[in-house]
Picture 1: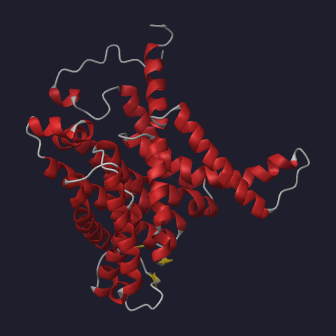
Picture 2: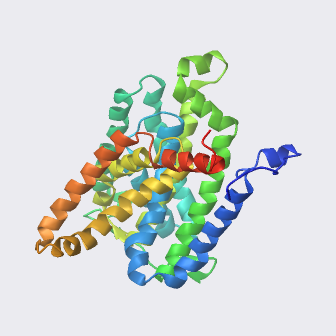
Picture 3: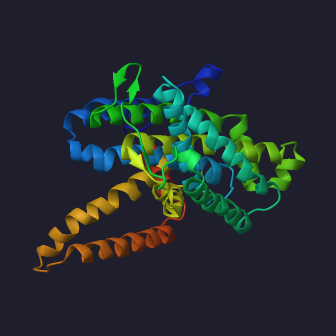
Amino acid sequence: MFYRENGQFKTTYRSDQQIFPILQDRIAFGLILLAAFVVVPLLASDYLFQAILIPFVIMALAALGVNILIGYCGQISLGSGAFMAVGAYGAYNFFVRVPGMPLLAALILGGLCATLFGILFGLPSLRVKGLYLAVATLAAQFFGDWMFLRIKWFTNDSPSGSVSVNDLQVFGLPIEGSLAKYWLCLTILAVIALLAKNLVRGAVGREWMAIRDMDVAAAVIGIRPMYAKLSAFAVSSFIIGVAGGLWGFVYLGAWEPAAFSVDQSFRLLFMVIIGGLGSIMGSFFGAAFIVVLPIALNHFLPAFLGLFGIQISTADVAHAELMIFGSLIVWFLIVEPHGLAKLWSTGKQKLRLWPFPH
């Protein structure tokens, strides 16, 4: 009854093409932004910022980049961790080697380094697809691990490959506390998510989706597969590279190549599959599922078993967490293979028809 579009007439092309055509969606989006920027900082503790909120925001940004490549363009990639590493180490080198380099400029330049790296390893997509492309992009992961361990210039001659940053500032404001870090990451996420939403709604996004659905038919109607695929790799790698810079600079502070291992690539892949392929909202759902659920299981599982008089050690909790987490992923993919975003879309559609059954 409350989620209806009756009476919401669109008399201009501008109003017909807006991101949220329904008034209730615009109000809900504004309330979500208000809650994220104002309400959450007032209620959240320092532990909540460090353990959940900041990792969730950064991983949602990385999942957004992966979703553009896999969900919208249909190009399977297992090298997302390497793109994050290139973005982090690229931003680090600009930040420490260029005097007075602003933090935001370093993050953008790191994202551009990841863009070039992504285009380089996206070239096989012009000839191969499917599992073969996944293996080709997996080579980027192993190459990145080798590069940052063996070429000491990238790590400022650090023998272990470990680097660190400090004295972070944005427009003269220090980025030191958890709240400042959260606001920085959330602002970057909001801006990039808005740009990505507009991009996938435009001509470029339609080209990506045409390539995803059937690349031969897309080429027949005049879409250039080379341009579409490489542009998807470029945009995706840039967003993932910026997320990698935030992960290293803001969340970790000090990191080594193992922080961007192949496990990170699989985590990002699981995020977009569980959240929903080809959905901007699905990136947020998937990041919340992957980041929040293990922490919730780690905290509440011992208390839940304690109600039945079952005592469980810390090691057993870690093993049970992996078992439950993996089982939930398999169960969810069987029950709803289109991800959490599909459930969200179905719920909205039912609300638009409620209480009528048709």
